[in-house]
Length: 294
Image: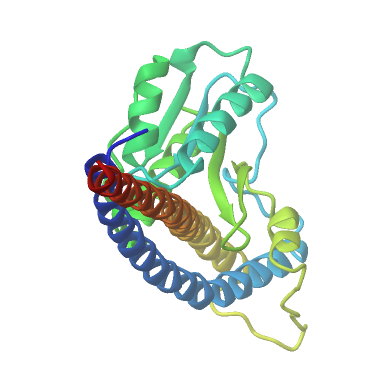
């Protein structure tokens, strides 16, 4: 049995760990609320924009855009994978790596690794793809730390340029979708070619109704040409915010579990300490009584 001093030392150490995990849980929870508010503020705008674009595209059957034309054969592909910059968030980053490998196996197994361009958003996935033997297409760790629209738009424009110039034939987004605090779903979705039907369904299926009496300025084609890149920029930003919310939720749950485990260990060690202390007192009393009897 461990000595009283050893048990007391373990209790002190676990109390310190409890303070750390409890503080990290509160910080992650506060960040989660901010991330949820950011998603809630952006989502109605994105949904409205997509419904407008869907209606305009549906009424303009002859519209041609390089972003909505699928390729007959995928010779090069790009993947944008979102992770976190730090750990202590459960299986958050491991699930992204698993989803990335599964996506490559299912969709791009015939391609050579040099024909798969991976854009890692977050230090964890950046380090992981280096270990897998891929060359990261840029450093986007700052986006994972502080999500902002400007960085997301810059990445989106880079992807649009690659697709429109036929440098890549398919673009996929991989991120953890925030469902609730306890559940984050690894998600893989096609970014390019853009499907406005799928985008409308994903955003509630609503449509912005146009009327023959409406006069559109500029023309319908010009509006679509302006709206389509904006929607695609928002899609990257939405995935970035979704991933950030999922990360903070995963870290909140991980730190909550760690704090609960620390509470259980403290209860067990305190009970053991009290038992050991009582046994030591009993032994001392027995020694005193036996010495008095002699």
